[in-house]
Picture (cartoon, rainbow, N blue to C red):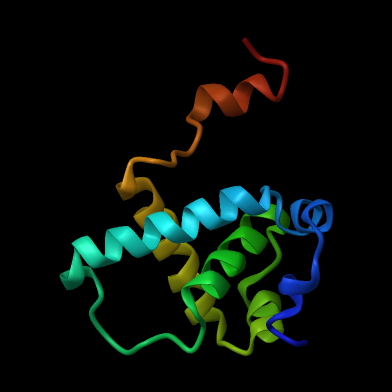
Length: 115
């Protein structure tokens, strides 16, 4: 699979594929870039094979579909352990930026018809 396929998606297709508006995706990438510039010691280790944009798409794909790390890794040409690290890192860094959050248990229970 061509890893740049997402560039050819129109806004509706992007939302259907990744679960967020393209503008939200751009805000996520921008927030991550700003956070990384402000916190250079958080960028230890080897540079990723995937760009930051692609890493965000990997995380969005996982959150959207909950496919296995193995399946996502084969699509993006990385190992399942790399996918796991990407998802964990993107999620925790987005939360650290203060611009994004994950709903708590109460919000999840509301989806099941519980008060």
